[in-house]
Image (cartoon, rainbow, N blue to C red; front, side, top):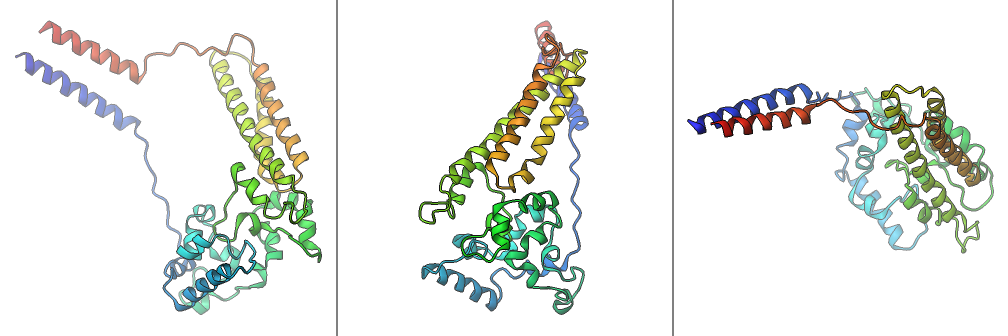
Length: 315
């Protein structure tokens, strides 16, 4: 008799938990598939054509022969050896946001034949010097900041020496965004003692980009304390204004970076950090303590366990 009661309690508890799970489980939406003949066709060109294999062999031979190659053509020997252009694009941020082949190369993504799909494709539009204008069609703030940089002025001039374009840092198809831990080694490709181009830049760039993490942390801390203060009924209008200013700085950080003026960049980041800290100090004192919460799901589980133990001991 005792085990029947125990089994019944367990079954009832399990059913209640199942019902709660059904109510709180999020619904996962299926992404729509875009009709794009460019992607459909190029996904089949992963080392399947003789032309593709020859092109890859040439890339490898150049590197093995010690021929100096620019990074936008030979982003990484291993990647070029084991993956096609399509594969690199397919795992990029561009692919995630459905920025497909025709956005950069032109052509007709809805055409059914190769000749029709390739109408309008221009190699000139993909020349290295033209990439800022092409990328700037979508990345307008970044282009505006880049135009004021020494990098852009060197790219526009006919002077000899390194002149970085968009693909120099982000690469053409993998479209990478360099992290703070990567930036020092990357900048050292041009800024070093051998070239004599301001070798102090790489370390300064790494430090500047790392400071963004401090800004993010300060914003998160201020936001957390503000939520608690609002729950306690405090007036946080002044604090919200300061926090919004800090968020605005953080939002503009990617475009500001493309000015490649490290002093200006650090000034902007510090301005955001100060705004975030002001948001914390402007919260009325004594309102940052979390309010007492009513029993939620955890409380329901605890109560269920207590009832189950009581019934077991009773029988």
